[in-house]
Amino acid sequence: MAFQPILSGCLKNNCTQLILTDITGVYDASTNPTGWEDASTLLAANVSKIEVTINFPDSTADKTVDITSQLPGTVTGEVEYLPIFTTSAYSDGRYTITYTITDASANTYQYILNTTFTCNVECCVDKMIAGIPEKLYSSAEDVDDAAYIEDAMLAEALLKGIYSAANCNNSAVIDRAITRLNDICKLNKCNCF
Image (tube, rainbow, N blue to C red; front, side, top):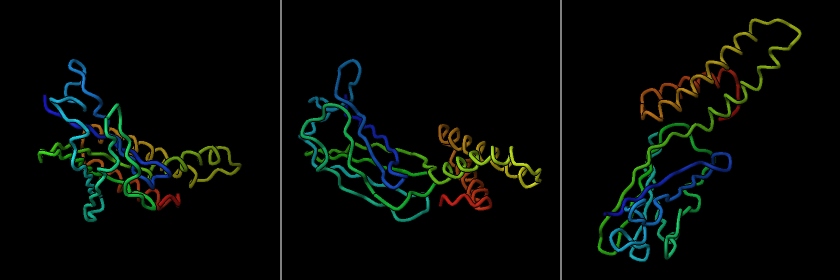
């Protein structure tokens, strides 16, 4: 069977570093027939190039990085690549990450990871929810407190909606919900952006 790479990605260090992990695994005839290190799939020793291209949600130009040097001589499990595209903060939205492996015979193997990052709006929702007890137990009844709590509940529902829409690959809902959450966060001065 042919080699089929699989990639996962997550943000770490306060959403400033993109960590990518090859989770393809090692070849096994019954449980992983498309994995690394078999003559019928792909040996790490036969890889000539590995590139990662990322498409950012804010329509900035795609960025491509050669990560060939990070592949071990023999793959024995997952391969975590050093942080790619370190930045001050990744903006919220949908990212397309293309993982391309080329072997010595110029055959290419590709995996496209579509993922959604929501660090900024998550920070905002967390701060808003954390502020609810203060609003509930303040000595003065205030109309603004009720509006704040309502906004916090709406923000949390929108965030959960983003997660569900991402699972269904519903990009239109993701984009609208992030836009609406950004508006709520700016109005409530979360200071997460």
